[in-house]
Length: 145
Image (tube, rainbow, N blue to C red; front, side, top):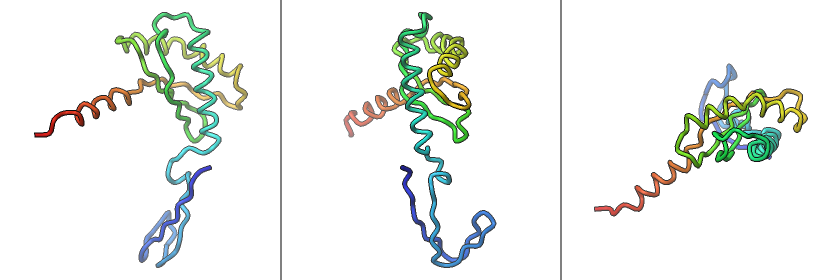
């Protein structure tokens, strides 16, 4: 469930062509904060599981043997899915070209396994959070002079 935030706006503030007066309370929901809804979260989880299975068992491309799906983000209209992957190999370009060539097959198989009215467009991106976390850890572990 999406959290609801209450916010008190001071004085007169124009908000989407509505004039807010002193001490009016406005409810800001997920839609205004760009947070995923429950449905988006469920679909993202399902797509993550299915794409992981397809990459593990159904693809034979050696370029994408060591690809792991780390996260899936669905757009609010459910028409595009950003699939973040981590790579165990060093050749990122080769793995990404393998994923791009496998995208139509993966989308077709996903449409057969998942019943959605519209199958989202799949966009693969490299997940850099592990490298970023390692960089921060290295900075924190350095001796402070």
